[in-house]
Amino acid sequence: MIKRIISSLWLLMLAVNTQAAEEALTIDSVVPNNMELAFPNDANIYPDISDFKVLNAVLMSNENGERWAMITIKNQSSGRRTLTQKHLLALTANGQRIAPMKLSESFDGGETLSLTLAFGENKFPLLNVYTRN
Image 1 (spheres, helix red, strand yellow):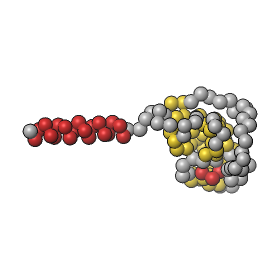
Image 2 (image 1 turned 120 degrees about the vertical axis):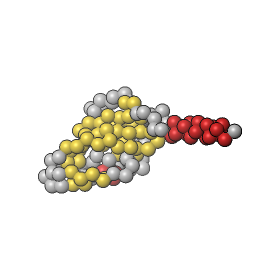
Image 3 (image 1 turned 90 degrees about the vertical axis):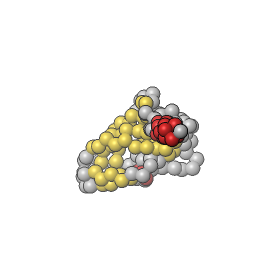
Image 4 (image 1 turned 180 degrees about the vertical axis):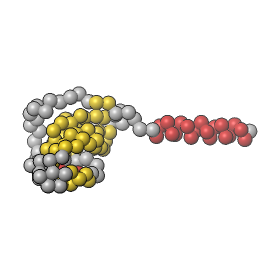
């Protein structure tokens, strides 16, 4: 009887761990960088002004609705700068603007880095990630 209980608990633990495992990300359809999107911004939501420029972005998601982006970003300043979540926004397919989860990454002057950022869960896919100079 004890063996059955232990076996049942083991199987239950295995099932919970399997469900808790992260879902694999897949790359969403690529949106050309030069594609012009014209969603209204009635709430006037903009990223903070910075010296950063997004050079490219690979947009990803999983079946749970988590939204991620691998971005390559350049510090256009000659001095050291820190990129935070306030300097970036993503535009979703329903026109919503969302910031990435907590972020603090230092860049040397002129440095270019690739970062993978989480944007939380959303029903709509990300269309692009941008900064404001």
